[in-house]
Length: 314
Ligand code: HEM
Image 1 (cartoon, rainbow, N blue to C red):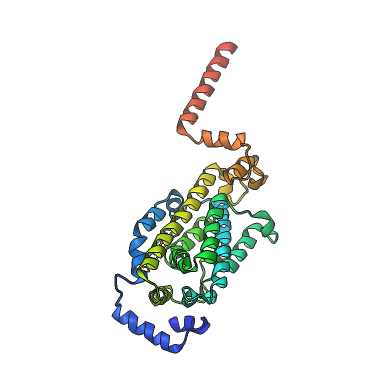
Image 2 (cartoon, protein in one colour):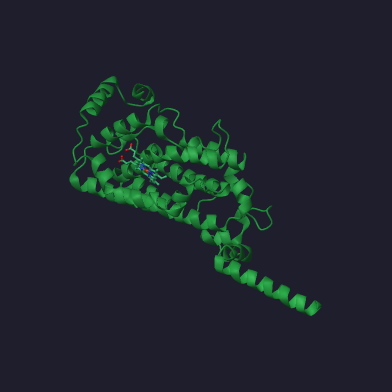
């Protein structure tokens, strides 16, 4: 119930609970409300995000465990930045009404997921990818120089997590055979929100109550579209890494040259993340072998070699 949410929220009183309930019954949103402007203004971006290869594969349950782990790493760096800036701006009038650390913040949950996947020393095993770094840099820039746009980043992530994110949780649990007790998917579990639909309504009302002029609202919608774009760049990066992962990775083994090493030590992986300049012949060969044309050429070569060998023996 929403009242559960209210009890744990800072600066929220009973009057606002009643106000919210009245508002929900009337459902009187105006097209000029920020929530409506954001919903309409990011529709195309949402469609594009849903249709990225990474998200489509994920929805079909076609996600390798190693890739899911890297996606969790990307989320950890993203939410660390977002929540740091939200903490810094918790008293700023353009953000204060949207500050719900107990209900929304994900950093601690992501840390639990990473500990589950990588072990106690997870912090030493993870690094921020190039695409994630761009996203993180923008969040810090907004938090420090344009805090009135922070709502765009909070909206894009948390509203999404409370919507499509709940679908992804079930898919991940099933596809990766994660324990039903919830290890590895804490990110998707909002312990302090008992009704996501109601909370989203409440959050929309809070966004609409912000004192913003038309120009600032337009800038917020623009920033939300930029946030979607940053997310899509992270998905595309993950998709490219996923194409290089070996089949062993599907079962949770590390994607390595011989099934035993560490992906992060592969120089090609480092190049993809902008941290090196060498290329890994093993991963290039494996990627090429995934192409049907290359498979055909290889089969033809083997057949020819067998023919020559048979002719020679005879
Ligand atoms: C797995 C693919 C996805 C599915 C199935 C999905 C599904 C949904 C659904 C059903 C809603 C409507 C919820 C409601 O009105 O209460 C929604 C809203 C939303 N989603 Fe997604 N989504 C997906 C991916 C994403 C991604 C990748 C993002 C951004 C990173 C995102 C951000 C949002 C936002 C911000 C909203 C709130 C829209 C609004 O009411 O203003 N979604 N999503």
